[in-house]
Length: 410
Ligand code: CA
Image (tube, rainbow, N blue to C red; front, side, top):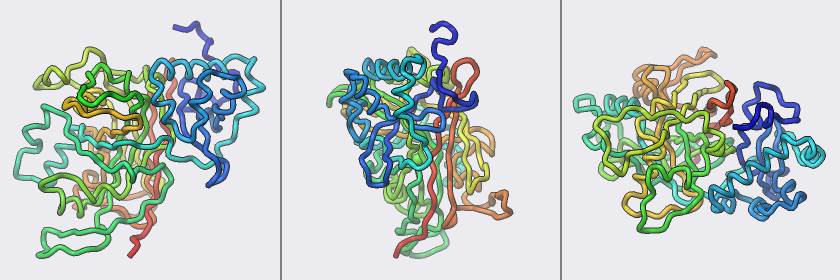
């Protein structure tokens, strides 16, 4: 443990800032929309141009930060991630670095934030038992809510890496085939059931070779950090296309991620034991260490809080998901990205999708402006944010992932 005060920054940050010296999430910014992209770290309401500081200080990791994406840093592995984080912490806590840091600290307002890394493969899981039971109850009310495999492995599917977009990117209402239960034939047109899924995303840094599996407790060797995800979903497209091969076009039109990747090291105070699992999973899914995470998520629709899902309620951990994802020998590549699945807690106001919050439109949500929603309207803005416990009772922020719905394009 560092002595008290050692990690106190000389920067003048408000005590409630979720982007203090214990967080230090990485992102990619530019001064103009099409300008050169640079790697930065969010501090307070500003961005530290760490690529520039590392170059000025002649740090041996400076070449990793000279890229326009995080991938070279992601590929460098955990000892390097630790060393870079320690140096950034030193810059912000040793007053001797004050001149160089202040010379490279930019106000966030006016900067453009970009997708922080080149996404390799994208996988989406289905790890909340509350979510899975709600969906089962809505879609198959006369059958058991969970399929027999659900408590034996983390269920997932391979998604579309190319349509992962950074927060703030507008989402055009997708078109596709849909057939309501009272319609005889399918038709093609804009989705009538555009939805969200509040999820947590995990960014893979260290690759693994084809033919080898990653153990559950190898999670922190391979995973660099965490962000927030909105897995936009067209429920009518999804319902018509999903059987028998799973999600496809109802999901692949856009998946939004928050711009700041919070390093796993910053989430140490958020680590908790995982939920009890019965039956006990097979040996390759058993962990020696605690990989549960306490994250408090909030979902806002047009600025109005509609849900606050607790990530601590997830049944399968991200470490079990990574082990399962590689259990067949599938290789990991730097930039692989996987999402937790919709985070839904046990309470009605802890559900992470409109499908669940409105029970597929049977009920409506009353927003603070007096309007009602079942699914999303054109023009609606969805923002998902989260905080995690930090040291000494403070909280750190995961920022937010936001997006506005644009009308369908014919
Ligand atoms: Ca999902």
